[in-house]
Length: 435
Image 1 (tube, rainbow, N blue to C red):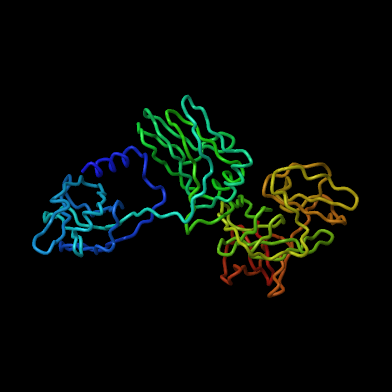
Image 2: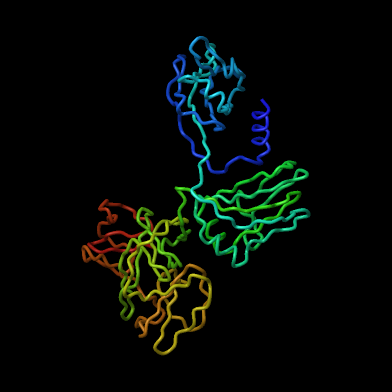
C-alpha cells in the first residue's frame, strides 16, 4: 500500500520518477453491451498507468469493478469503485498483483444504465536506447541562481540532441520549489516549468523535446536551469528509437520563401515544393525542383503558410550549379560590385515578389538565401524584379511567375480548380506561381 500511495502522490505533485516519454496502447475499445470485458494478462506492465474511459449516461457518477478469476474464486482489484460523472479513472498494478492473475483481467459496470465502458488503454514508459551525461556536480537553485550549460563543451553534446529525446534532471529539495528549463538567452522553454515537492532522496524530472523549433534552439544555444529550492546533481540526455533530427522551416503568408540550413533535409511528404537556381539570364532565374536539400546551399520553397518540421537526411542531391547562396545565420549581404552581383528576394511597394539587386549592404535573417551572379541580370526595366522560371525536367514545362490568365487552371496533380489560391498551378500548359 505504501508504494501505491507514494506513486499517486508523485503523480499528483508532478515530481520524481514519472517518465516523460510514454507510449499509449489501446487494450479494448468498442461497444459495451453490459457483458464482462476481459483483457489479456500479457498486455499488463507493472507500474504502467491503465486508464478507463466511459460513456456517461445519467446521474452524478457510477461504479465499476475490476477483477480476475484465480482458479477457485473471483478476486477484486476494485469492488464497485465510484467514479464521478464525466471523469476517467487511472490506476496501476504492481508486479505481485499481475503475477496473481492467471490469464485475464476483467471489468464490469454497475447495471443501472448510468455508464458503459468506452475505452481501456495502458501507458507504458519507453526505455531509452542511450543516455549521455551533459553535466554532473552540485548546483543550488536557491534564490534563482541559474545553472548555465551554454559553453562549447555542453553545446557539443546538445548539438546531437534529437526531436523526441528527453532531458532528465536529477535533484533533491528541502522544501517545495520549482525548476525551469530556459534557452541560452534565459527565455522560458514552453512546457519546461516543473513544481517540485520536498524530497531528500535524489529523484528526477524529465522534459521531452517535442518540436523542431525547441530542438534547434537547444542545439545552438545550450540550456539554462533556474528556479528555487532545488539542488541539482545531474543533467542527462536520453535518446529513443523514434528520436530523429529535424529543422523547423517557416513559409510566410506569401506562400514562397528562400531557405538555407546547415543540415541536409528531406522535404518529401511535407507538401513543400523545393527549387534551386540552376541558371540565370537577364531578368530571369531558372529553378530546378528537388526533394532534398544540401547543407549550406540556398533554395526557394513554395507551400502553404506555416511552420513545418523537416527531417534531416544522410543522403541528399547536390546541386552542381546553384546561384542561390546560404545565409544560415543572420548577417550582412554586401552590395553588388562589378563581377559579383547580389539579389535579395523581396516584395516591392506594389506587392511584386522577386529578386531585386542590392545597391547597399542588407541584413538578411537566419535560414534565408540570396542570389549571387557574376553578370548583372537586372531586367531591362531596373525597377522590375528578376522573375522566377519553374522548370520541370520530366515534362519540360516552365513559366515565368505571373498572374493567372483566362486559361483553365489545374493543380500539379491534374485537378482542375476554379479559383486557385496562392501556390503552383498548371495554366495553359505552363507551371505558374499564383501570388
